[in-house]
Length: 214
Ligand code: URA
Image (cartoon, rainbow, N blue to C red; front, top):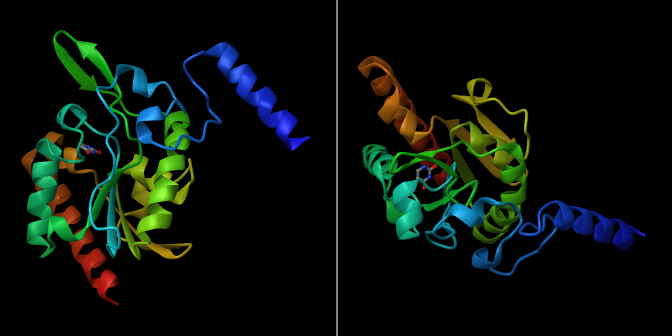
């Protein structure tokens, strides 16, 4: 019976969009057709870092540079994140870095590809991969960088970053520390806000470091 339902669901999503199989359980990211984002992306961007890291950083989705290079946080937001990690006394090579959504979602503006925030459907579709990373790496501490990451990590579409900032949230075997997305520290309108956002990210990474050693 359950199988029948599953088959019906797969068929109806396949009928509405032949390139998407929402119930697909792909073996590799390259094969993933659980949402439409693969179509306009250069490649999927997997997480990277030690398989047994005690801290996992989760961002939103790859940006333009990440899409081209196939690695997470290697563009401007990544440079800021690297600086914040260093200031917090952490080494990038010791933490696992990934994204809630593994393909770049963008819209054209002239010759540029402008970032588009992933929707809840895409976050849920890609939860398939984040769950696997959470199970494999088994990091005690998860740092959610921004609202999309927080929703994905807590598997809660109603989670709000403002409510979670500065708190440590127990979630299954993980401790979740929520902070701003590094891009916000780059594009906030005034220097005071940018400084505040950056300092908040550094403080969250310091908290994660302490929790990771407990
Ligand atoms: N922003 C993200 O959320 N992730 C990246 O990998 C790069 C930018």
